[in-house]
Length: 286
Image (cartoon, rainbow, N blue to C red; front, top):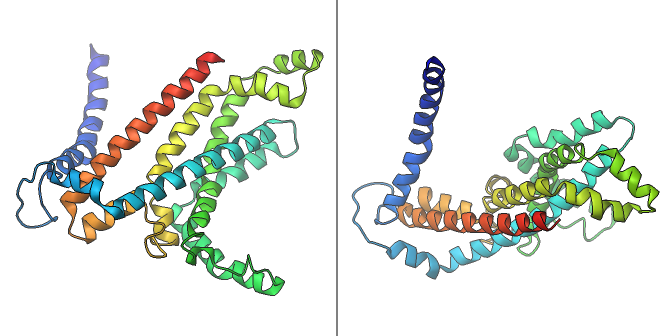
């Protein structure tokens, strides 16, 4: 009985803080999404008008397209690179522990600081090197090109995101017994066969976790864009999160962007559920 009291004493303050700083603001946002509140002054109920306007908004549509494009490409690239690095770091190589620590360093750095650093690299450092080398490709600031700016953001997101995904894949790889690989070698299996028949099926749950978390995180991309392009050039790299922030807190569209946020929340939940169902089905098949 005393243990239950102790557990309640620990859990209730945490639950209260979670409700105050997370659940309550979220419920407020949902409430205001049915009004015309600008973030200040009086308001009136407008029903589902804001939700209908979201689907008619060309700017919101462009932001959704960019965000999905960015999230899909970055999720795929991050997981491919992370898995390759994890396999390399799990092998019997020198300085293995040191290399693991080095690869994890980008993850502990501030996203904004990294964004500002890469902004300088893309805008000044690389163009100077490209000019010296006579390379037209390097001498161009891709962040100033509406068609290429998103690639710069992908590069930065991948560079930082690889660290965490690699850590999860390593956690999965260390659970695989060496006896399986030895038995496969005796049967004449090559490296590629071992990967598809042993490694990948055994780390399937970790692959599922990485894919779902990566997609969710990149769908909510914000800091990298703020630090590197500010949504530009023009609106070419404006994500949904950035649009909601700017419209809600700077553009007097608090209620409208609250509706946009609710719609986007539902979209992210649906995508995550679909991912889980597909990937879990693949796990069961293996």
